[in-house]
Length: 334
View 1 (cartoon, rainbow, N blue to C red):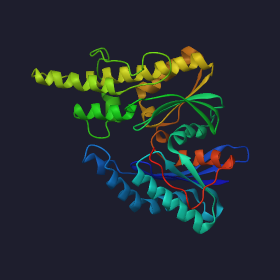
View 2 (tube, rainbow, N blue to C red):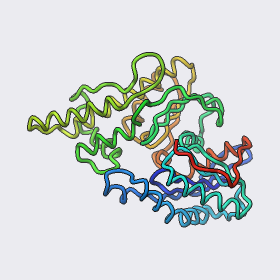
View 3 (tube, rainbow, N blue to C red):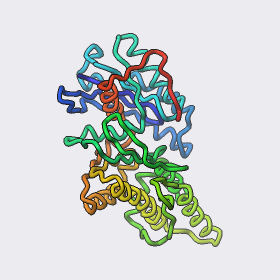
View 4 (tube, rainbow, N blue to C red):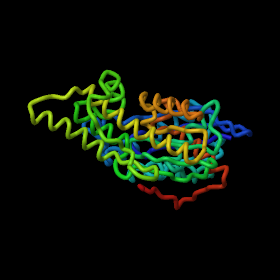
């Protein structure tokens, strides 16, 4: 069977065709992404109104290209999966309404997809996908959530950020030290050049029982370090600040994963989402899983950011579980 996945939750217009074998093996036949980075870079962050307009302009061509590259006609599709939550409401509405129109006009089943779960489903596209139960950490610009996954459609939230997401914190700190939006990749490279012990920043792991995180304190501490130095007529080393901030952020995430492995007894970890492309975070989780005797499943960087293949993969699981939507399907920001 073939699944068309459509993703438009933030600033990437994406479509992908994923093939599912009778045994449930998923193969990406095409994956097309139209990025809006250059548009939003002018403003230092995503402008929702501009994002929605850009999606409307790109979605038809992106979907057409994905079908062409996969060499799969609309008539061969078993379902259309579309991200309808969470995300920017205007951006989501473009994808949802486009998918509804396409599905209704061709009589193709429509499947709604949760964006955060889709990030985790990207691991199912690996040659050796994870087998439940496993722990899944979705770490991105808008979300930082730890789940226990007992089946592809059975998620239990163990912990989450109480305020800022990890990726948002990386972007804001990067902007203060002069890095262009989005700052995540540049912060990753710069951190490799600095001293991670140059600044003592608080861990985002919330003290006490549970697996929650808070990045607002860490972000504020980093911003205060920059502002205090400038008030004294000094400049901080961008590399040292990036390295110290990265060490604190990565350390807190790894600490929560270590505690969850210990308390649940689960022996597989999935790390997913845009921030999962960070080389320091990947290295920390590789070390953690090696020391804990657990298996680590890491999607390639191309499947960490927003993409249609992850929506199609999650759509396959939901479709197999009998989930369907009709023309009343709506978008939900939260």
